[in-house]
Image (cartoon, rainbow, N blue to C red; front, side):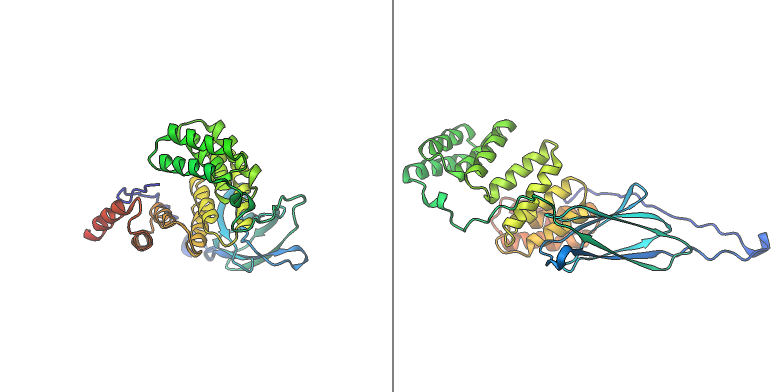
Amino acid sequence: MTPSFTRRILGPILTLVLMTVGYGQTGKPPRPPVQPSTIEGTVKLANNARMVNRAEVELYREEELVGMRIADAYGNFRFEKMYPGRYRIVVRLAGFRQEEESLELIGQGGVTRRVMVQLEPERNFPVIPQTPTVSVTQLAIPEKADKEYRKGKASLHERKYSDAIKYFTRAIQIHPAFPQAFNDLGLCYRATGDAQKAENMFLNCLDVDSANMYGRINLAELYAATGRLSQALRLLEETILLHPGKGEPHMALGKFYFDSGNVTAAEASCRKAAGLPGTSADVHLLLAKIYHQQGRFDLIVPELEAYLAKDPQGAYAAQVRANLAKIKSR
C-alpha cells in the first residue's frame, strides 16, 4: 500500500440556497426557516450484556444512506444537522442480529430525538475458542519441516515465488499440520494470480489452526477481492472477537471499509488498531490516505511522522520522507 499524497482531490461543493418571500410581497409574515435537528441513540444488548465491540450504525433517509457512525464503548451515537423527513436506523454488531428503528422528523426542526435499539444474540454465531499464544501445532513442528519453511520465507521475501512454493510444499509434506506454511503458500499463489489455490491454502491453514489470525485476515482479503464482501466482513469480525488485543484485525477491517468506500468506519477501525500494541506502522499510512481522501490535510503530516517514528527503516520510509519534505516546503 503506497498512498499518493501529492494528488489534489477537489470534492464537490454543495451549496444550499433558501429563498423566502417577504411580508411586503404576500401580505403574510415569512415562515421561520427550518432548523436542523439531532438524532441521538443508544445501542443496548439483550440481558444487559457488556458491550465488547462497537456497533456500526447507519442512517437512511427513505432509501438513501445519509450517515454512518461507530457507536462509542457505551453504545451511544449521534447524527447532527438532520432535516425533516422519514429516517431508518440500521444497527449491526458481530454476534448479534441486525436491528432497525424508524422515526420521522416533522415541523420546523430544532429538536433532539432520542432512540434506543436493543440487539438480540444471533443464533448459531460461530465463536471459535481462542488458541494460546503458542499453539500445540507450533510446538509439534519438526526441525526438518521448519528448515524448509524458513527457506520458503526467505524466497517469499525475495519474491521468488516458484522457489517459495517448492519449499513450503516440502514443509507441509514433512508436517501436514503446519498452519504458517499453508498461509504463506496461499500468499505465494495469490501473488502469482491463482486465487483458487490461494483460497484452498488459507482454508487448510484454518483447518489446522482455526483461530490463526493471519490466515483469517488473508482469507478475508481474498473474499473481498473476489466480491464476497459479506463473507469477508463476517470473518474479520470473528477474528476481532478471537484476538481482541491485536491491532492487525482492526487494521484489516479498516482497509476493508476504505476499499468499500466507507471512510468513516475505516477511520474508526484504524484508530482502534493504532491504539493497540504491536500493530504494523502501515496503519498510519492508511490513516493518512483516509484523511487525504476526506480533505483533512492537516491530519496527514502527524500520521506520516508517526509511521517514521514507529518504523524508521520501513518499506515506505524513503517515500514518506520525500512526501513530508514536499508537504513542508509548501
